[in-house]
Image (cartoon, rainbow, N blue to C red; front, side, top):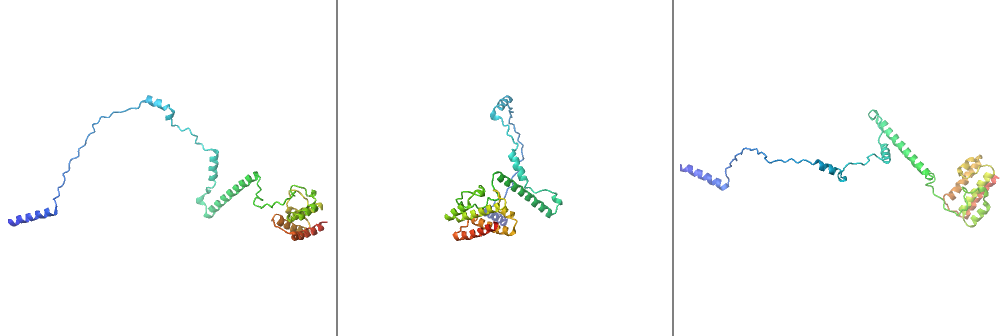
Length: 250
């Protein structure tokens, strides 16, 4: 009996030293449904007050804005729709034909845009053929073959003045215009203000004469339009070639 009491006492000491307290299960309380006993007062809108306020402009929220797209918006909507791929039975087309249809579509669009740009520039008076061509430097020329009649120019006097002023580029230009005049006087070409040099070359029926005049035209264009500076000796050599050609015309 004493041994049993000692054992129980020892066990109690152990529990007390570890601070352990036997767990006690909480007792569940039954749920109680509470009824809301608050009094509800219904509030109704005053229709007369609403009618008064609805007539005030501050409370009128109707949107009278016209949402119809303008012609400018419709144009750009149509323009960008052109860049959408063409749907030509894509499920039944081979990949090659599908790619070919896309390429043709964009080529036609590019050609159309180029035509529009060309038309606009043409209406603006811009020459597309000469827009990137370098203009010759002014040479104090008192006349031009596009504005004056070559039959009214005294070429010998004008060439002599140009050489005296060491303006050899102008002298070469005058030599070429004098050559055109002699060809026209011999009825070998028909001179006109708006004709090009290549047109005069094509009018010459003699093959040898056409070849020589083509060479003279090339030298003139190099000197005048190419803005090549020449000296007195170079001009003498060019003058000799022109004189020999003019003798063949007579």
